[in-house]
Every structure is written in structure tokens, then in C-alpha cells.
Image (cartoon, rainbow, N blue to C red):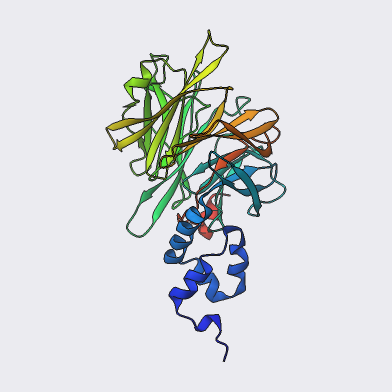
Length: 378
């Protein structure tokens, strides 16, 4: 007698369905109510994310086109890297045009050419939240706002919040949107630091970090953290002295397995035909008021690379970076072998910047506004 899958133990059903690729989970959820409930449970989603992260040792990325987001997987090694387009993430209206996209611990923040609203997505849970913004990001002609998503841990859930701020010689505004209350709050911030509008914030354990400098100095020799629980910036935390004393003009942050920060320093050698020196450090400890670092690698890259975003595999000692050579975007990998360049087949600058971002599935829930909150925001 043939048994139905629904008669199997729940643990076995979870194990079977957890082997389904991320791109096919929509079909699983539509199969029946029990599969939908199971696939949305916390125990299953954690198992599925863990399997997706380790399956075939692939790195997940999101590529952006004018109206759509696409999931791609990159097999990363220093011998034969390759890229595979997995499919479209159909979470957005085809009538919207994406301007910028940011990734924060599995959540995507999409900025549009329409300056009146943004959307926050969790592609894994297929959740979205549209937000009306109070001040246009294009009111001064171009987008100089800095953005961040984070969350405050509560007793039973994580409360997601959205930070945006502008810090220029003529205008200084800091505001935060609370997903629970659906309200904007203006923050009282008098910064003695400065964060470049071209710097991408990196999310770690619910908070966001940026390279920063004192307003009186010209070198980015610190990082600064916005704490979404306290809704305030912390103190300036020093970058490794062994790197900052070399006067690197370019500083970029990244996240290592959602547990550590990595910082990349770049240096032009004016007498070496613009050859780059790259210095990468990883945090060994990071807290609210202290940070310590260890060196990951230092190298002279030849030919030159111009990283927009970078990733590292600490165990394999592999460095990866997204590099723009208009109109193409490349993934560079550097390990024990030579530098390899992989064409991601995404046109840089044609639609939005950056055209590709890394992606890690997340269990963070995006709360929907109540009917009353929707009425109050109209």
C-alpha cells in the first residue's frame, strides 16, 4: 500500500522539503495548506536556510534590473568560479523602476526613481512593506541620503526599523521609521563625525556600521554603529592602526558569516601606474564601545581591481569583490591561485547602483501595518 507524504512524521517531511531550492519554495507553499504552514514555521525555515547556505558551497546574490530582482548563485573558488541565474523574485510591481538596492541581513531595501516611497522585502519569506517617505531623496538634485535597516530584539519578535539621514553643509536630517507603529520620528543628532554618502552600511546582529571620520580630519580611521534598540549612534570605534597609519584613502566594510566585520583598505601608488595595494582586516571582538582586529591579508593586485562590494571566505582564504568596468560587472576571486574575473552578465550603471549585492536568507519577519495604521498614513 502506498503511503501519502502527509502521513509521514513531521520531522521527515521537513527534511524532504528542506532540500527544495529557494527558487522553488513558492510552488511548495501553493501545494497545500499544510505545506504552506510548515514552510513558514521557524524550525523549518532555520533548517532550510542552513541547508541553502551550505549546499554546494555557493554564494547567493541578487542582481537588479529596472523592474525586477533576480536571484543568482555563484560557485566561488580560486580554480573555476561560475555563475547561475536562478530566477526572478516576483515581489515587485512591474511598473516601478528600481534606483538603488541595499541588503541588510536578508532584508532588501529598494529605493525607486519615484521619490515618495520605498519598499522593504524579505525574499525568502515573500514578505514586503511599502513605506511613504516624508522628504524626497531627490530634493537637492541627487540622492545623498544614507540608509539602514535594523531591528530591536523584543520578547517574542524582532522589531524592524528603517533609518535614513542626510548630512551636508546645508542640510542635516536624521529620521527613523518604526514598523510596529508605522510612524516616523525625527532624531536629535549633532554629529561630530562624518559618513560619506558613497559608503555602504553593513548590518551585523541588528545594527548597522559605516566607515567614519572626525569632521576635523581627512582620513576615514574609524567605524561608527547605529544601535536600533537605543535609536542612537555609538562612539567612534578605531580601525586597525596598522592600516590607518598607512593613510589609505578608500575604506569599505563587509560582513563575515553574519558574525564579524571585515574592512578593506585601498591605496593608489602614484609612482606604480596606479597599482592598488589592498589591506583586509577582520574583527576578533566587537562590542558597543570597543573593537579589536586581526589581519586577513595584504596584497598588490595586478591588474587593477576596483571593488564596489567585497566578500571573504575566512576558512578558504578567498577574497571576492564586485568590480565595475563599464558597462559590465565582474566578480573577482583571489585565493592561492591567480586573480580570476567572472562576468556576471549584469550591466553596471544602466539601471541602478550597485547592480549586484550579496544575499543571505533571513527569518526576520516584516510586520504588515494594521488597517488603522494604513488609514492614518493616507
